[in-house]
Length: 368
Image 1 (cartoon, rainbow, N blue to C red):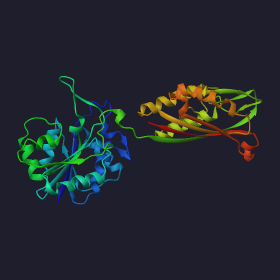
Image 2 (tube, one colour):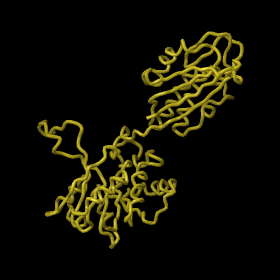
Image 3 (cartoon, one colour):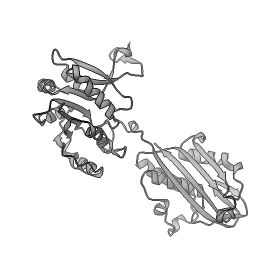
Image 4 (tube, helix red, strand yellow):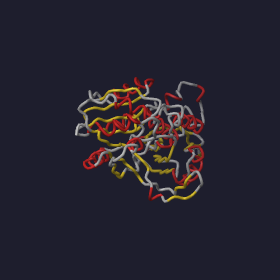
């Protein structure tokens, strides 16, 4: 086979929201680049035509460059007003020696090489191959609300594989917009189309909730202790004969949580957001600062899924206060107390922490 790949990415992501879904973070890069990468490792692929809206061409080139993808097989074609027009534009740019075409949605970043190879293999005794998955939900016919047998239906995925001559003939005759390629090919008579079992993970990104890639962040903080009336940990004041030496209220575990959140979304640490030389934060409530950090994560389209904190201190005794700490953090993080883990340990009398001169905390967060 001499294979060409068409990546259909000509839309403007109007259903997704303000941002273009094609350039949302996915894998090690972004949605469209992750959709492209598996095809570059498929034997027989001699050309890759990416149908993209002209206003996003430069952004795509930058995204490819950031991933160090410099492949002469890749070229851009102008995306059309519809998916059908985008594929038509790409077909017109096919090299003469191509005999097989794969068409893939640019908004499907989770396609695997294994699925691509199975789809190609199925063309051995067919003109085209369509990838489908079964619906796990009950189905009804919308016009009259009548139930239908979901076992008789399949949800179409990509890549779609087709012999080049069949594809050209079908799209040449396409006079209206189609949602998928198999519908176009089905307009021809005597075409053999085979079904390939798809992958539930190979979903098309349409709405922000479709991008569920988690981010993990780690944070650490330490403060010295001096004579005082008590320390604040996870928003809970614990009376004792010392206090944290700090610019704010010295809530060590909350500071660690904030750094974990910020690093997970690629931002700088809390010292950048709340400088120690800014008097506005003298004695600041760390829970209020945490709310600001959560708003930063929200701008990245992420929210906290769970938190794990380890507090390291010789004093005070922390265990009796852990449940109250969880109940204090839960409404601010907007998660249940079951998703907050807090442990307390000593430093076995080693170093400043072990001598009772300091208190430290590690935090790990999962963002979705």
